Image 1 (tube, rainbow, N blue to C red):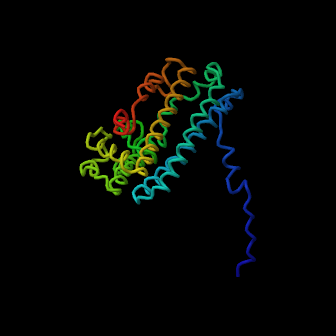
Image 2 (cartoon, one colour):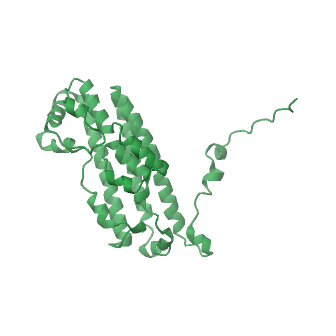
Image 3 (tube, rainbow, N blue to C red):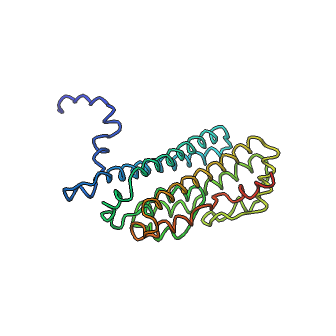
Length: 271
């Protein structure tokens, strides 16, 4: 016979959040030399927190897609609000990172070796979920990683913008069939026919108009974060090559002012 059952340990704040494990995950490389650089811990924590927020954003976008596909505008608007609020936090975190001077970053930068933010599969997942699908991403995310396999799965699935078009079509706005049945693996392209539908949404359907405006907010919010990120990198390393041999600031600047949802911007002068 088995012995008496041991009472289960009470759930605590620490055990629920796995704090004993979490707080051991910050491992500055400079500490391995016996001369830890003070700001390396900040650098690690900021980027780990970014990854956690990316995880939450991706979770929310999937929920937002489901709400749009089901025609549930109130739930969709609530999800939009949460994602937009998180994006504001991502921008604010740049302020914290900018308390680190170029000299401070330079004191441990070489220890990063080939590690680079370009390797963030979760941020690429965010882009893929929103509809920005660049096949060059797969050069850095191969099938031997979980992130690379996830990206290859996502590229075959509808994006948020596809779900948005289906939401409009369900509301009787007659989205063109070719847009509803487009090859979702391809980048989004502007469409005069879709723009006509969007103009009708703004003119005739206040709820659809609200959803359109939250899509624009989302596009603008990501652009705001990109801009702050570019200026932070430029402030820290100037025009130097980025970590991992990336193009650094030169590449990041190319990502600015490229709308996720071109049709929603193309109609602004006609509203």
